[in-house]
Amino acid sequence: MMNANFKEERLRRIMEAIQQNGLVTVAQLSQHFNVSDVTVRRDLRELAAQGLLHRAHGGAILTSPVSPEPPVIQRMQKDEHCKKLIGRAAAALVSDGESVFIGSGSTTAHVARCLATRKGLTVVTNAINVATELANAEAVTIVVTGGMMRSSELSLVGHIAEQALRELRVDKVILGMRAISIPDGMTNDYLPEVMTDRTIIEMAPQLVLVADHSKFGKIASAYVAPVQRVTTLVTDAETDPATLAELREAGVRVIVAREL
Image (cartoon, rainbow, N blue to C red):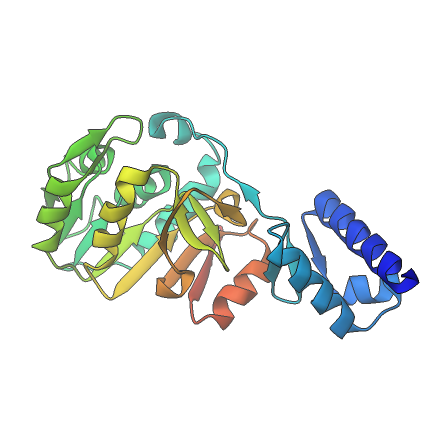
């Protein structure tokens, strides 16, 4: 009984530490509680099984559900500097003459802005704001899917959009995502959009995920795909290094967008 009490107290204090700091490492906890790394990892597995945290490289992170997002037009100004850096870095992955799909969102709109001067580029999109960003790009061909408009995101979703997407193939897909958790994958908070997202992902073998630091360690209501499906992640320098290390271990190429 005494050992059980010690364990319960240790689990409680682990949760206090992760709620205060957002993340903990096995080494820190092992030293703090004077127990083995094996014991700490067992504790973290038990807490993860209860849905209280998520395992990360060398430790664990606090995973929180996503809160409602403001409309995409308002989000263009939120973390704008990070999104501009991500947009520029992601655009650098696209060559003149390629075909690329760009999904909806504020970060993807910044990618589109950086592609406006390209030559011989074909951009397929289901996002009205992305199409608008490229409307005056003389050397870029824009293909817009039909579909039901989700007003807050200015995105076109549903059966009509998916039917059009299945007819198209591109060299790369550049996509944003509402929430990203390594064990729980990429998730979205709008159920009617999930099948559209899955159809988009199947358009090309190369999936470039653009996501700022605020999208990680969170879970939305609808599962889209595992993080292992991502070919390249482009994010900013504020994203937790332990999360990036675990993504690299999962086979994802990670690009941290920085100032030139």
